[in-house]
Image (tube, rainbow, N blue to C red; front, side, top):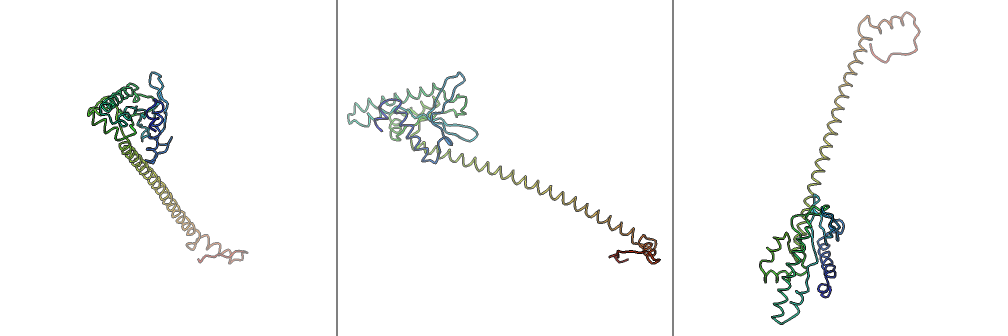
Length: 249
């Protein structure tokens, strides 16, 4: 690990990205669903950029994380007992941090076409103690980074940030579920209302039909001059019939 983080920029980036991915996965994130590595995008001028890691947020927002911060001078600082050498190494480390901050700022990741990024880019430092030491030696380093629209995060800070992202997604899911529940409930009410309205119309139609039937029966059966009384008189006079009436006169 030490060799990879101190040899060349490509190896440093690969190792830093591996540590970064492990943290993201430990936070419950899934590659290509919650984040993507080596995301390829262009700016408005057509220049191609590949941020190390892009985190996906609700409403198509993103967080960009760079993992290629040079760590060689930090390991030199850690691996010597000579105070003068330590002083030189930590100065060089601060200088390399500022150079990397400037390089990230110039890339202007926030203006990539496909990404909707916040105004800040995260630079991941794979050791919390290295970040603490750098901030202790140069208290202006954090402000310097922020002025360049950069935030330096160590593993502990990154975990807290990713837990916040997880909370944002959970809240988004709850809001989405609440909206879906409201839509289903509204649709259910509409269906109930339509069904009751139809039943009401059907009931009214049935009542009207029953009234018409009763009225028709009255026309046939009621009174001495009704059709039924006349038909019975014809029957009494000798008309041959085959069907008996099931109703009482």
